[in-house]
Length: 496
Image 1 (spheres, rainbow, N blue to C red):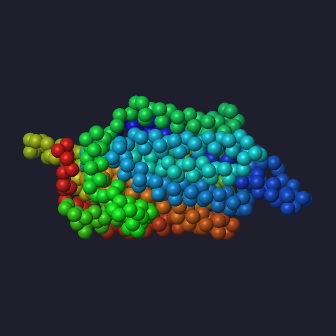
Image 2 (image 1 turned 90 degrees about the vertical axis):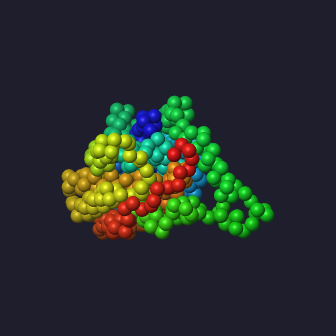
Image 3 (image 1 turned 180 degrees about the vertical axis):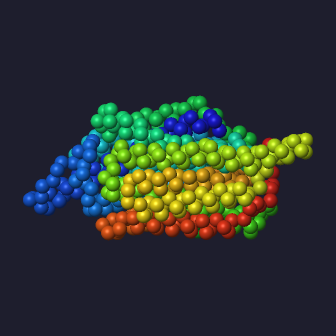
């Protein structure tokens, strides 16, 4: 998996670097259009010019905040819907044809998106900011970053034994949050040095180009040809590529039903059980809630910081650096340490006592996984409660650090999912979680953005109270997950 880590680190740096500049760019573009429209309807209205490359205190009004929130909502709904459709297909195809090709496809969508963003930022008088929706569509068709994360997890699962996957997934999550932490700082430094916001998107475009070239020419494929052929043969035996008697209504329903990939969470046949199916459903539910809350909180938090504390790009970037550095440290230090103390060291002791290596098997989730997830969720609840009730920037930042500790839950949940299924279905499973993540990218931002729009003028902290409530729901659901949720899977090939 270490072949992919450098490339993914660059990918994450580009992803994190554009979050704040893009939101502030959109805020400026929306504000500019709002004042122009108002001046047309009211010739006596006078406003200070909106500068895309600078601070615009005149834009810190509820009307502009609401319009910006609605537009960023559209930017999340479009790729969310499209990626929900495409992620399971790309994930399942990666089981049969390898991971690399579909990583390149995923990054290509972001490549096109950055080109459109650059054009809109450079020519705002000629190109309306709604052109950004076209970029969002390209992002969604390529599976967006949800399939990008799913494929990196699948790549790591191909290279890592089941007991070590939570730490391996944690490394990729650490890369992601490291990018989100340092990306804004790099972006802020570039903007300060050049005086231009657009330079950030040029750099991001260059990074996506390097990522595509590096994956295509340097990174080795994680799936052997034999495993790919076995997955193709199994797929053919299941009859997904066969049409009996033409386009029957049953076949059409199978192809049109976007929820069909979720059947991987309800396995039947030898080696399966009701307890296994319940564990898969519950773990996927908790993972989806956590992901949805994270997606729903991102934009409204940045907008809230601008409204409540008057923070600009540099201030928000420092806040994100603090939060995500903490999260990254937990993923690189705390999660691997827990895995070593309670898994690796115990396995080493058993090997010394028995005199031979203990086989590493898929045994489902265990008490360590569950305890990590539950404690992590509690930190998230405490942090979002802090968001809701603090009224100073310093205390808000402290609350952000508390929420960051909860970042170890997501890779632990993803690892637990893969440990419940045979190896040849890892891509299909993670593609299904990509479907759930895509749907949460649609419904969570809608819910939280509408709450923010409805309450921003009276009590803008309402959204954080609701977010804390969703984490409380995830905490309650986690208590229904049972340890050791399945027996050892039936071997899929001689290699296993």
